[in-house]
Image (cartoon, rainbow, N blue to C red; front, side):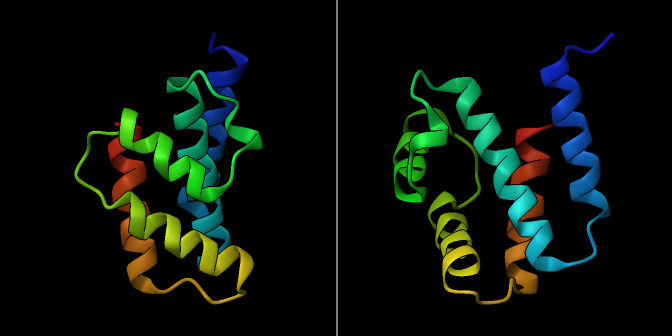
Length: 101
């Protein structure tokens, strides 16, 4: 059986893939990214800001996606109430597919 943490990640990935609303999808994607980050960092990710997540990522993320752009988009969508664009979703999809191969 899957551990509860693994099962939680799996459920979130499923919700992410099924999400029709771009804003919701992007926010779910950011949550999956934060969960990935918390597994690889000794720091308590839940107490950190988006900017601090980006800085922690520089130490543990060695992929090809632009975390800076991903973080900027999240801030814009989450805090400035701007809509997620098609490009935001492409970036999110690319990152989530890479993190959860």
